[in-house]
Amino acid sequence: MKKLPSLAMALMLCLGLVLPAAASDTASVETPTTISVGGIVAVVRSDGSLWVWDQDLDAQGREQEGIFVKFMDDVVSVSTSVNCNAAIKTDGSLWLWGNHVVLGDGSRPTQVPTPVKVMDDAAAVHCGSIIVVIKTDGSLWAWGYENSSGTVGNGTTDPVLFPTKILDDVVAFSSNFGSSAAIKSDGSLWMWGRNDDNQLLNGYQGNASINLGPMGIQPLQTLPVKVMDGVTAVSCGTQVAVIKEDQSLWMWGEAKLGNGKLYTQSDEPLKVMDDVAAISSSNANLVVKTDGTLLSWGESSFGVVGPMGYTYTPVQLMDNVVDVSTNLQSAALQSDGSLWLWGYELPGEAGVWGASMGARPATPTKFFTGVAVPTRPSPTVAGFSDVHESDYYADAVVWAKETGVTGGTSATTFSPGSTVTRAQAVTFLWRAAGSPQPAAATSPFTDVTDTGAYYYDAVLWATEQGITGGVGNNRFSVDGTLTYDQMLAMLCRAAGDTTTGDDWSAAAVAWAKEHGLTNGLNFGAKNSCPRSDVVYCLWKQLA
Image 1 (tube, rainbow, N blue to C red):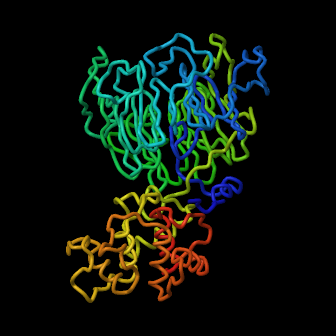
Image 2: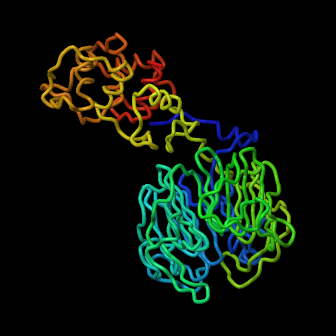
Image 3: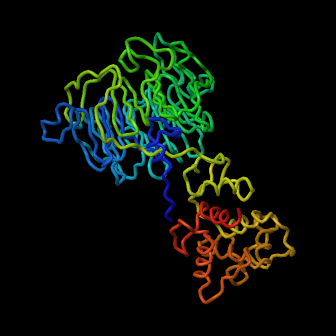
């Protein structure tokens, strides 16, 4: 099924309108990372080419623009750190390169100067002290040599040299300073790793610990634990920063809150500000507001914020910003695709190791153009983390929830792409009609006998109204998958019309088209009709 095209995000970026919440330098299945600053600076251009800041690569005959050289093609997302660099190609393949990179096959070469393919089906990647991949099925896999704080999340503090499955249903991940965090599709935040600043919000508890000598015993959590709900983005720095569903920013731990103090040790989340679109947190904090304003505060001894020292309150640096990335150096991406850099520079480069890439200016300076501007999902609706304002079926889902047609598959998920059974479909239609009581008390179908089943009255009512007569042989096929033509035929009959003729399927589709129910949908009559389109067609007909 082809969804209706949406220009909402493009208009937001072009016109500087409100941006949805996100966290930069976070591995996210919904938003590719097109700028990353770690040991190198890497950017993905709109044509899919990956460019890196490396003064030596031009000697190898690579295409060069200013201080950037072209490194790879067909890239959609990139992540860099001091030693490890990763890229995901358009075919979902994951490629790694760098210094002492754990390649996931048990090896840890001293140098990996050119990208090596590691796995397929990668949707998002985070490269730091550990490597984390979210696959296309939502499973999170992690591995790495530096696991002394339990940041891999596999229950140990030992090096992990092979990809290990940690969680399912993950949509985003962040890790830094020994802490790891993942957001599931239902908006729940799960964390593991260091807990010496109560990062896990459980009273400094952990299932393990490490003795740091004069610094004492540090509690660790080597397996994921749930921390909170209602989270849309997370960034792990010297503090934990999250953006909630209402686009408010919250921080805790050894937090730099921008409240006039260098540090505020907080054992519980503290609200920092509203209207936040993106956050990248390390020694300093970079925040993009929903109007595109870039704010920064925290440690500035490396030029991340500005002059030497610290900035205790937010400082406005730029406008028209859509994405940010910070480590010891910082980067901002403007809506026109221009890359701006500032801050301290680390030695190292992509491909050839050992040379320094030089210093970085202390204030944002334009360095590169043509960078791909990531399309972020619009804000969610109806309390569902998987339904966004820009989705063509968003208004239908809001209507379905408000009228009691369906409350979703959980408190926070609607599962728009999930299949619908015939029993569910007639129940949706019955509820939309006001849940009328059927005249008969006995079912005519051999597979509809449980009077306590949620669909019992709905099936009897639909049969009495001539909306459906079952599938033959006195069976209704309760668990049968609903097809488009079945759904449209039910709506046609519920409206008092008929699907007459030799081909009832074609008649149902023609009726729906005539009444505008399927405008913008591209489907096959015998294809399964997902939840999104069932409520969409119901809404078009009944709302």
